[in-house]
Length: 172
Image (tube, rainbow, N blue to C red; front, top):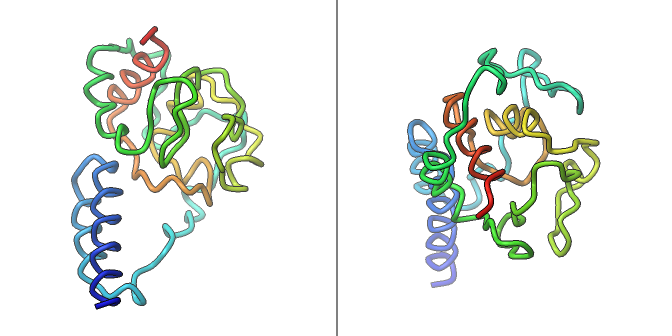
């Protein structure tokens, strides 16, 4: 009975986290992970490869070469894209969930939202969340902050990233 409960809890948690990934191969990976017994499931994302080394705190280079300045963000579409994030994040000030509140995140020092327990990787990253840094981070969070506990796979479309940032910057 205890093993069945643990399996059910692992499956539920895996599916919840997969919902943050935006679909695609993340869903297959989540389903594959959910089908394995708890003791054989990997607990962390793979380490970044040499070709995808973590950028410095002041770098905003993206894997796809896109720049935030080359796009115009659409806050209304960003709100739609943000629904993927709502399982873990709120935009209301002080409302920490699985992830920290994202109210006022643009301009905030990484790992500094009051009342949220960050990973050491995030707290010690030296990052300030400028719009450009968020644009880079949202592409592939584990690349930008290796060891972050955020399991979100990322937003591969540059326009979606720009739109989410426009939504986060807009008065809500």
